[in-house]
Image (cartoon, rainbow, N blue to C red; front, side, top):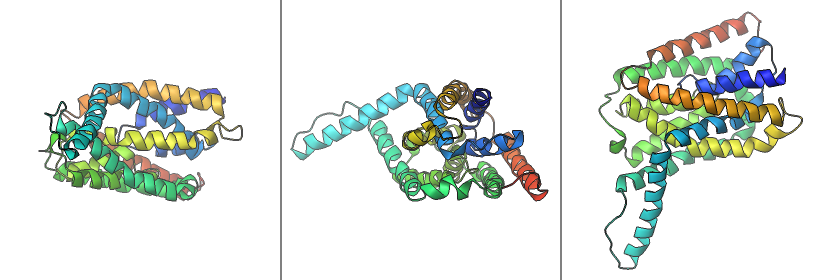
Length: 283
């Protein structure tokens, strides 16, 4: 039964990681719906390695270009400090993107380390998750409606990266949604939908991989909810499903809004409130 549950949870992780509906909320709510054991924060963090691997593969060319430009910019800076000037062999915009990702990762890295015990326990309350599903859904709806959507990734600034980084840090609370929070801030800053999603996905890579590696020993422990084998299976399934979802979402956002996702997350939040209020579920 654990193996079947792992496959289902892997599919859920892959389906919900990139959509602004919160994968961590789904991995907490759906086991409750089916009467399964809560897989825990460590399981969630490790399965996200699968979906982030899908991001790396999908954006492989962009990531390779950004990493190369960032390192070349460092080398160029050292040469300039020695009085040597050479024509840049990289796109400065790619080098800046590397810095944007680094700077934007600092808030979630620092807060995640400080609040790790709270994240594993208190933040997994279904009351909190139901609240964040509804509240962030409303915020995303407002951002999607009022955002100018006239800026692209090329228009990003260091200020944008910092603000979106702090928004991403809110996803330490299950139900917020890492992509949803980052995209919402991006929309408020005037980015178009595709640009906001693109930067949100790139920004998530260091944070998610770091969290997954940090939680790996706990998830592989025999005393964990699912153990090593099912957790690895769920991660592999999440990778496959996640790659398909990210390709679909980037195409969707070229012409359509976030409205269906907003309606869904608010509905799921209200449903969770109802189950808790009637005593059907325990928080």
